[in-house]
Image (cartoon, rainbow, N blue to C red; front, side):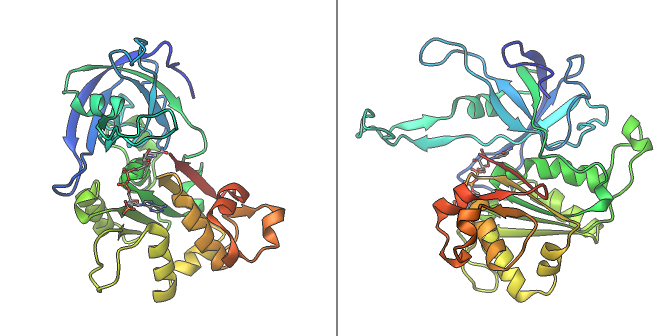
Length: 322
Ligand code: NAP
């Protein structure tokens, strides 16, 4: 971690940039590849970590922009097999201003354009980019991937690290990569639940579907929140999808009750609350630790605030939410 500090970033180069959405949507998400060859970052990152981007220009106070962290969407050997190219999945932040504090102008609803996400999405192949990192030590795959089964839970761009994980577990490095010598395809059970607002917002969807067709041990699910389901049911969040599967299919609960299983949650801050609550309601243990003062209250009565403060992930649950 922290091989390159944000106050002394190194210069990479945009290798490629493409949209990675399934269809036309109100959102814009890109798959951006960055060439870090010749920098200390080359070969020194792992799938699941993040890295820093320092956009050009200055902020409203005339100071250079601060670093922003983006999840690495590549396997540990990079996009090229040699650790020279890392990918990430930025979404353009476009929003209307809303007053946050009493000091803010309550009539201001003008467009707010996120500084770094839009700068990064605007870059063209060949453009220079200042980067730092890598960051993060917990949201990584275990040393022996075959010793575990996996439930990956993503909302939106939170799917980024799972792209890298799936490549690492199932696809393997190119034959020319030094990593190819010791790589073994993972035969464990792997399930990914991808939560998005609309079907067109699904990211890397074609690639993930193809992967699921190729690997019988990998299942891809989608939880679409603002569209009716094909069975006529209402749209749902990731945890509501899991709960429905617990009721409908005989296979979700065994995965959750299996000591081998690891849960990885990545995406919107707060998505873990629904997941933790649902696990507790179904008596699933091992992924969360409930503080003593809450343990005496029946889980059906827990409030969102209590879950946020008093329910923590264990070593079998990896959480990256912002
Ligand atoms: P988004 O499009 O705003 O939301 C994706 C889906 O999540 C939508 O269906 C949304 O439903 C649903 N959702 C909203 N609240 C939820 C909740 N409490 N529980 C479960 N699902 C919920 O997502 P996005 O704009 O791509 O944002 C992704 C987030 O992931 C960002 O905040 C980003 O910073 C974070 N992220 C974190 C990492 C990391 O930690 N390393 C990496 C990548 C992304 P509705 O909109 O219909 O309510």
